[in-house]
Every structure is written in structure tokens, then in C-alpha cells.
Image (tube, rainbow, N blue to C red; front, side, top):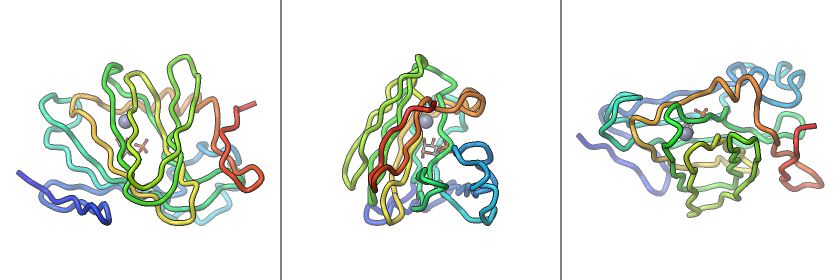
Amino acid sequence: MSVRLDHETGILTGPGVHETARRVKDLAGVFRDETARASRDQETVLYRVQAWEPQPEGKPGAVCLATTFLEPGKVGDEYFLTRGHFHANEDRPEMEVVISGRGALVLMGRDRVTRMEEMAPGTVHHVPPGTAHRVANTGSETLVFVSYWASETGHDYAAIREQGFSARVREVDGRPVLVPVS
Ligand code: M6P
Ligand code: ZN
């Protein structure tokens, strides 16, 4: 079983690669300005994920990888972002490798302390166990990054859906700033 990852474009092809698209309508309640989100074209794709999971989610025995293509843009003053999640298996980490574009990796522990790492071509980021993670595109081109995680990791969206992150990446004086949620 093998696939191909194009290191110039991040495009992943081959048997078993599956693609998911997340549109404006899929991110209801995610942005600070829900009115602004609701008034946009709901079919606009914010990001696509091409994933290769040699074992099904939750089953041990494989390393999975995915390329995320996150479009540039903002809802109000908040940059386009991925939904974000904890891992169902709390002790499982993840790694992100940036192919192109500019962004911010937002990391939040169970204690709700949040920090941000700047993403640029070639930067590598470790998501420690027990840490919710989401990515914002702070640049003007598509942000492309590759993620690696173990197949038994599992995604847990519930906590973020209910409580969100404790800070948001917003444009302040023309720059991305991690602003605590008031
Ligand atoms: C990265 C990884 C994937 C995740 C994707 C989109 O590629 O973390 O596991 O699915 O980003 O993020 P989300 O699932 O939070 O929308
Ligand atoms: Zn993850």
C-alpha cells in the first residue's frame, strides 16, 4: 500500500486517499462574529483535507497523514481557521509540517491555557498530548500543511464545540494577534 505526497504542492494521491471539504455552513458557531459568518455564501470552501489512514480511525497499528489546504480570508477580524479538536486518546500527540503559506497553530491545554506558534514554509510543530489544536490562515495565499498522527488517536470535537478555545487569532493593526476571549 503506498500513496504519493507531492512536497511542492502538498497534494496527496493514491489508493485510499480520501478528501473532505469544510464549508462556511460547516463552521456555524465557530467564529466570534456568527452574524458575519451566517451572511456569507454558505457553500464557500474554507478548507480541504486529503487524508491517508492505513488503519481506520481508532484502530491501532498505523501512522496517518493528511494535507490541509486552508484558504485565506477572514470572518470579521478573525482569520479563516480549522474547527480544532482534542484527541479521543488523550496521550496521543500529532505533528504538523508546513508546505506553503503563513499561519498560526493555536494550542490549548485542558487547563484552557492557549498559545500560538507561527507557521511558515518548512516550520515543524509538535502538538503535545492532551492539547487541543486548530490552525488559522494569517496570510494571503492558501496555507498548506501536512499532519501526522497515530491511527488509534481519534478526534474529539465535543469540548471545542461546546466551549471553544480561550483565545482567538484576530487581525489587530494589520497583524495576527492571539486575543483572549472576553
Ligand atoms: C489536520 C489534522 C487532521 C484534521 C485537520 C482538520 O490535518 O489535525 O486530523 O482533521 O487538520 O482539522 P479539524 O478536523 O479540526 O477540522
Ligand atoms: Zn489532531
